[in-house]
Length: 469
Image (cartoon, rainbow, N blue to C red; front, side, top):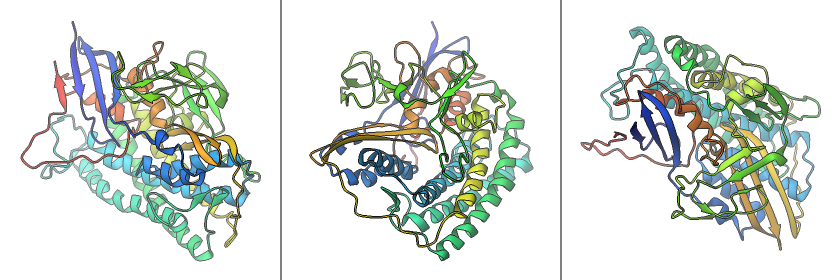
């Protein structure tokens, strides 16, 4: 009989995540990823005014709040049959692009780098007993400095977002029709100046650091593949004059080596092993499952989204692969590389879009809200494909459904297939099961965002996060 390893919480992620694995002969033979916090935002939305969704759903997350403002705006535009002007698309996508930059910088340096770089050990934030640090001393020292330098550039990305969004996080700039307040010439000049600094750091420091880590940890190109299916609903695409700047709506199926057009009608959710009651498999518009933590055999609050019945990987690697920009492989290290390369590409896209903005161009008007309607919005965000589905009855929200990127990547089993991250860790060979560095590195390569959460450190009290039975 194999040993069981429980990591709870998985640290250096956004939110609460537990990983339970079974290990036989030092290899992972089974895995469960467990989202341990119930949020209930879908239930909160019922009975609200439809326009409130743009602001309330942003509170789902502090690091990717702009994504939810975009998703809810698109859903409302779908329900209201609003045709968004190109200027509305341009500035909204610039605001959203700023979030990509701040997230990717923070994830690489604050979440991923400490897996491979030995940080100063005189502060509880950096205390580690990993022991698997391979970088030469001078390279390690440089990356420690870059870790702290990156904070300023990530902050600059939020500053740029706030120029057009009013504040960050939880912006007030994204709205039906694109944006609330037009950009003026001074803001555009300031944004270009800020963007130039961020792009310089990404291209001159972040990307070289990423490939240096890959050079010293080459076995991670062979770890963490998962199902190998990739999905994108399309990113920075569909512009009348500019066409597609990044990724078209596509899916890649590993088993048949096919790349197909994305079809939103093929999205379903399954709750067989999630703490909800209701229909086992359903389409997003069909039902809102009710929470049930007493459910037999369930083990997580994360449902199981599927595309045509299959688990999919979403996020930077999926987008880089589907756009043909990076196709080295599908692995933990490939995800980390793809995220850094995507940060570079998003910087270029924002630069292109800034050149299209007409200063002081107003897109807002008095919008007429239907008494009864339904609509959905799909958007590629920092971590992958995000969907918002809503129904309006008597002028109020009667139904709201959200499928987040981390639900795709960290889903429960559906009875036929394990979730994407679960498949990614199964088969992993552990060098030291008592200190399973490989598992944390694989999970963090997905950049999980399980919820907004705060971790508390108590001086003098050791917290056990890894248990081996």
